[in-house]
Image (cartoon, rainbow, N blue to C red; front, side, top):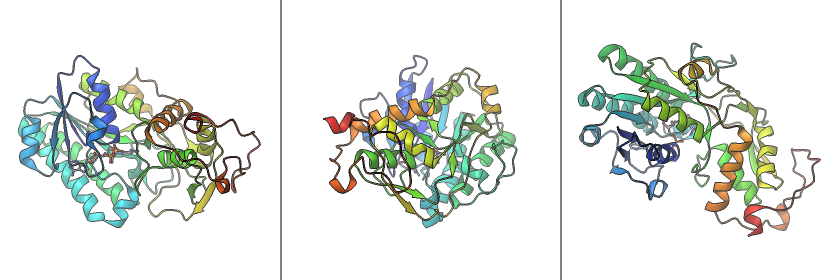
Length: 343
Ligand code: NAD
């Protein structure tokens, strides 16, 4: 099979490239990426055909899609705050970009299109767990672009018979997710902060909950979807219904790193949803063999990746790792400094 991954030089895309390259059924992997948030380093050493460019470039899409069997469409500007700052840029990349991908898939001859939507489409709907039939209520321009993504996939299925599969990803984390940019996600930001002896910043009161999904689990589902050519025009939650508050995430990171966290408070971020937890019934029915990686295991693997990828600084006396944090009342003793700090 020949597979195209848009956004393949990004966090999830590069993990998927690595996973697919281990499958003998996959003959060729083509990556289209404009490197706006991704990087060539993420796919260095992997056997991929790299098309550097934008998904708005129809000629580039036609070239990359020729002779392909499936497209995994991940290219997008993936941040809520970024979309609040520049809604038009998010719309062009995410909504118009998806339309371009679907048009190219149609021109190429009914390619299987799997795409990333987001749990953010549930937005202000307070019902838990989030079942796909709930009313969507986007709270940010980003969420609207993801609603457009999944809606366009459904429309292309019904209008043109395109075989599609829109997934709603829920807070994906794991190795390869960068912490060093202003729109970084919470797990890499906090692991990086704890390793560096810096405070972790909690937006709001920290009671917000998230259904974090390990990137390896996401890649397993995507691979299974490609290999079995799973088609479902209705959106499918890609998460398994576990839920953890941000305050509870801190001890999980502390225990994986072996250091205490210092904490800072900041205002609730505009567009942030208070709670998120997937109903995984539709996912489990379509992918019965996929067993999710548990959060503690996933965080450990992520911390290991950070230990090998950043040069941690020694904690300053002011941010000594054993200083009791302002927010978390810790009773456990501070474990010996581990991993990176020992080196
Ligand atoms: P990422 O930023 O690491 O990857 C996105 C990739 O797309 C980058 O390599 C970027 O350079 C590329 N890209 C962006 N705009 C492009 C364009 N116009 N043309 C070509 N390439 C372009 O983000 P990620 O976390 O890997 O997210 C992948 C997908 O999953 C996105 O669609 C995102 O919206 C969705 N998603 C992610 C999460 C998550 O928790 N990471 C949650 C929900 C949905």
